[in-house]
Image (cartoon, rainbow, N blue to C red; front, side, top):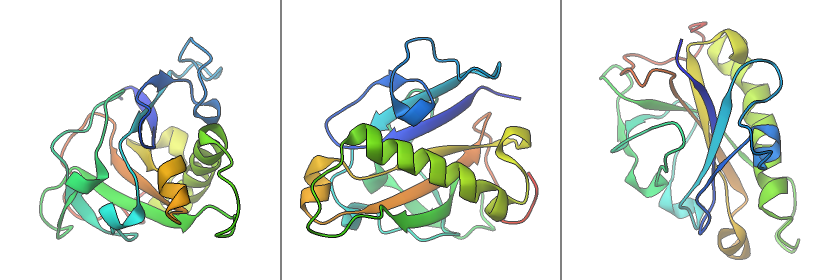
Length: 171
């Protein structure tokens, strides 16, 4: 199987970091023998990526440690070949008047929630799946615009095209 990656999306910060809360521990190893890489990608508001769970689509490129601009997601029917599928969409649990809790807090929450929701959507534990997760989450500018939305983007660990939904497949 290919290299595992959890990618976190925010505006203005692009970098590679370890899995734990999308912070950088410098070694890219999450302690269980599997290597985890995260990346932060461009995003400002939820309106730029109006996606829902079960949406399938294509983007110009998905790569470990690479950036995904959510505004470039081209939705396609799931029965057509595609590179990614939205496994979950949810809000960060702070109200509209709350101060931005910080990128580490938002990305850590997003990572934990996407991994927790993975099993229920795919029908297999994350560690045993051929799928990986890329996370889209608000940064401080998006937060200030009222964005609390987080999306979990699923794709094949070897970047193979998917045909059909991955929901309930146990892949």
